[in-house]
Image 1 (cartoon, chains in turn purple, red):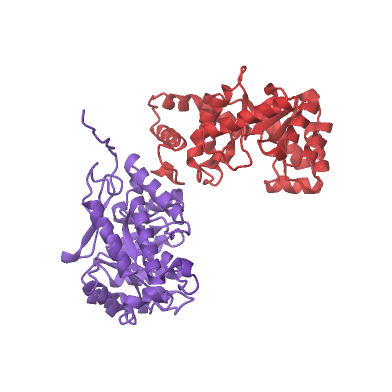
Image 2: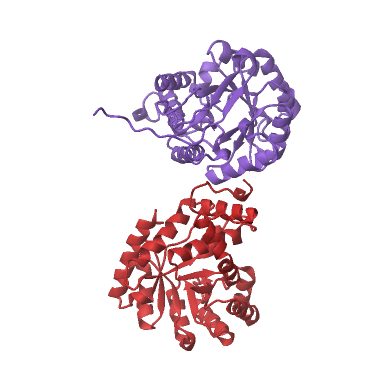
Length: 314
Length: 285
C-alpha cells in the first residue's frame, strides 16, 4: 500500500489582515494551518516583510546596516522612497524614534508631519511605530493616526500601560493595531481581550509577543509564538487568531554579534556577512514559529528571507 | 478530607506583625476562626526564620494550641525551628505535620525528625534539579522520597505527598499535571499514599474576584482525583463542598438550569484542564 502522509486538521484560522490602499494594498494571515503547512490546508497569503526606517538618521544602527542607506537615511521621505523604488519594498515600517524623551524628544506634531510627508511620497502600506516609550507613544501615535486617517496603516505598539488611547486613535482613524506584551502568552491574550472589550475589532489586531534575537532569548519568543498559533488553530481561540509580528531588525542589530568588527573577533569572520546572516536566521526562525509580519533592516537579509518564503511556499 | 488552615502565614502583614511583636491576640483570633470554619489542623508558616526561628515556632505552637484543640502543621525551611516546635507540640490533639521534606539531600534530616518525634511529614515532589515537568516526573520523585522515608524509619502512612501546585496564570499546564499526579501518588502504595496541596497557589497572581472561583473548582477536581488534605482557606473550602454537586454535574456532561453558573463552571474547568488558554479575563470571553 502506498504511503499516505498524515494530515492534521485544525479548528481555527488566522484572521486576514489587509493594509494599505489601492493596488499596493496587501494582505497577510488568513491561513488555517501551521506555518507553511500548505499540504494540510489553505495558505492564501505569504508572510510580509516591511523595511524599517526611522524619523531620525540611524546613527544608533551598526555601520554595516547603515551603509546600504547612507545616501538616503538623512531624510525619512527619501529613505522611504528608496526602499519602495530601489529595493521593491512591499511595505515600510517608520519608527518615530526621535520622539523618545531621551533622544530628540520630538513633539507629536513633528512626528505627524513626518508621517504625512512619508505617506505622500509612497504608495505602499505604512506601519507607524512609536519610540517604545509607553507614555510618550500615546500622544505621538494619536497625532500620527489622525494625520494618516483612512490610509489603512498599522499603528503600534499598544501596550498594557497605554493601549486605551492608542487603540481608540487607531479605531477612530481606521487603522490596524499592534498589541505588544512582554513574552508572556497569558498577558498577550489578556491584552487582546482588553483591546477588543473597548470595541476594537479583533480582526484588525496584530499580536506582538515581543521579539528577541538569536542567542538572546529567541527561544522564548519562538515558544510564545508557537503556543499562540497552536491556541489559535487547535483550540480555536478567537483572541489568539490575529497575525503575529516579529520586529526583528531592532533586536538583531543591537547585539554584540552584529556589531563586533572582524579585527576584534577574527574567528567570527566577516562582520557584514555575519550581521546579515544573524538577521536572516532570526527572522526565518520566527517565520517557522508563526510570524506573518516581519520588520527588518538589511536589504540582503530581507532578500534571503524572501527567498526562504518563496521556496517554502512553492 | 483534612483542611489545614492556611491563614497563619508570615506572608500576611497582620500575622507577620503579630509574630514580630509576639502579640498573641491576632494569632489566636485567626486560629480560632479557622478551627470554627472547619480546619482540622493549623498551618504555622514562619518563613525561612533563620534568626530566632526556634523560639518563634515554639511561641506559635503554644499560642495556637492554648486556644485551639488541633495539631499544628510546622511550616518552615529551618529544621531546628521544626524540632523546637515538635518538642512543645501538644500531641493529645493529634500528631503534628512537618512541612516539608523533598528530594533535596538538604531536606533529608526532616525525615529523621519525623521518625524521632512520631510526626507526619509532607514530601514535596521537587528535587534539586528544579521544578518537575509533568505528573510522571512528580511520581518519580515521590518514589525516591518514599524510599528515603523507609530508610529513615518513617512509615509511608505518615507521608503526605505534595505535587506542588503552581500558578495557573504563568504555568497553566501544571494545573492538570498536579491533578494527574494525585491519582498516580495514590497508586504507589496500598493503602494509598496520602496527598496534600497548597491549594491557593493555583490562583496566586490572578485578579481578586477570580481567586475563590479558581480555588474552589480546583479543589473539587483534586478531591475527585483522591486528594487527602489541603492547606487552604477553610471557609472557601466549605463553600466548595456545597458547590461540588454543580461542578460534578458539569464535569459529567450535564447542563445546569442556571446558564451563568454553567458558563462559569465550564470556562473554569476548561482553563484548569488546559483546553482554553488562561487570561485574567477568561470568564468574560
